[in-house]
Length: 240
Image 1 (tube, one colour):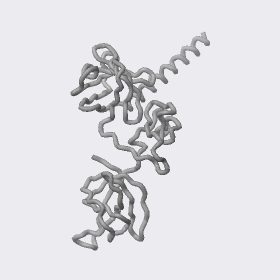
Image 2 (cartoon, helix red, strand yellow):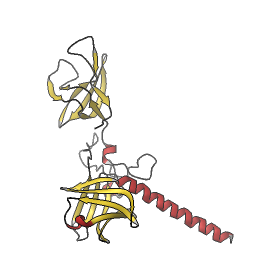
Image 3 (cartoon, rainbow, N blue to C red):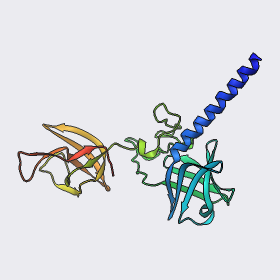
Image 4 (cartoon, rainbow, N blue to C red):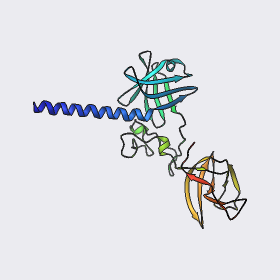
């Protein structure tokens, strides 16, 4: 009896572990995914034994998708009671094939572009996601880069450079000086990717990339209306 109890407990723990893993994976994929003009929304709502999916402006097999399930490391899109596509998560993309064998890639709505890390000439693949194979690993192609101590891999957006956001209309300059030429004028609310920051006297200057242009932003600038008044130019983080 004791042996049966131990076996039953082991099976129960294994089932719980699998359920927790599936739940974590499902949490990673919730939200809107796009391919062309098609938008597929994956929800956490139970739907006839699977989870609810909503397709909008989709055609072909994706037109019928109304639910999804997770089988191991594969996301299965289901419509009219039958599988319509099998995909694996790679960072901010779901990549695989539809039921007809055609390549299919869905991209997370609002996914941020990722810059290759310094010293990498483009060979690295910042993919993340569930696929931990060597061909789709993190920055160094060494496999999945785990998100902290969680069970999932980091996404492209999470592995990208830190960002700051302008809180006033700002001048992106060619060097770390208020006397240098203006590369581009940034509107209030512009998100830029940080490359490096350094203190220049009593001013903090950051080298940033914005809309394809690279230049320098000062964190605190004197007001053009009142030189004795100091204005914050950008804040940490980026919010819509």
